Amino acid sequence: MDQGFGDFTGLGCDEIMAWLKPKSVDEALKWMEEYRPKIVCGGTDLFVDWHSRKGLVNAEHWLDIQEISELKQIQMTEEGLSLGAAVTASQIWQDDKLDAFPSLRQAARIVGGWQVQNRASIGGNVANASPAADMVVPLAAARAVIRLSGVNGSRSLPISDFILGPRQTALAPDEMITSVLVPKECLHVPQIFMRHDQRGATDISIVSVAVIAKSSGDQLEWARAAVGAANAVPVILPEEQEALWQGVMDEDKLTRMSELYAASSNPISDVRASAEYRRAMVKVFTARAARQVLGLN
Image (cartoon, rainbow, N blue to C red; front, side, top):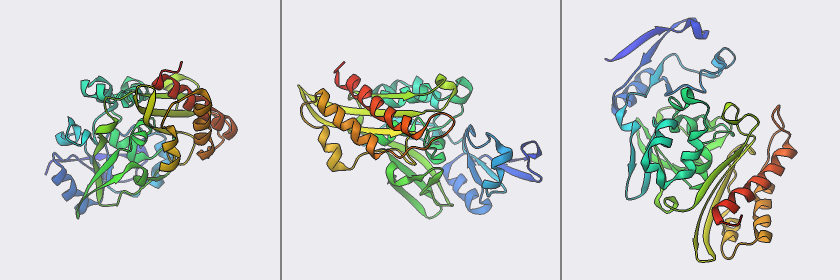
């Protein structure tokens, strides 16, 4: 069995824990059933401020999925763009396949600095379910599908059904994320990711927005948007409201649409911004992003 044991007392642990490094998903699932470990990939969020957070992690062992080659693949399929759970932010913004989905590339490019981008994974960003997670926002706008494997089989969930709240997901204890699928209709169409923060990539978002759209002449066939860091989960509109994007877009209509996203937001106040400011910025950045995508500037 290819596993390592390490003394994690430096992280505030009093016992020796097993650090498991499977080479395949099947091996990972076998060890998940046997050891009930905590899954870790880059660890860029999990091990931050560990001394205050260790009590929230109910695990005696760790399962490191970074060396599972099938989880590090970026592939174009008949369904769309498939990103393995262990694909890193740096892979995303450097891979030519992401020419098809530039909003995710833009988000990945500002996830912390180089060190973070080389470790932070798409699966970890989704599983962590932080309201301010940058890479989640383009995925939410695209209605990405999260693919899961567990000891009892596999299943797929829309990202809106997978992320349930801050650090809360529909992931079962015996499951792991294997890939994220971006539907093909959201590839090779105009799109953008924008965020508002205090200090660039060294800070987390105050508000973030992704807009994806398809036009025919002066008619907007459809548009999808998602807002991050302004709600417990990414803000997307119900289908009947989202359909209001269709048709000819002008400033009045753009204002109405941005107001809908602001009204659907329920931000918090914290050290970075007040709830009122965040809601105002939702309106500003939704309109700004849409203008750029639709060529209204």
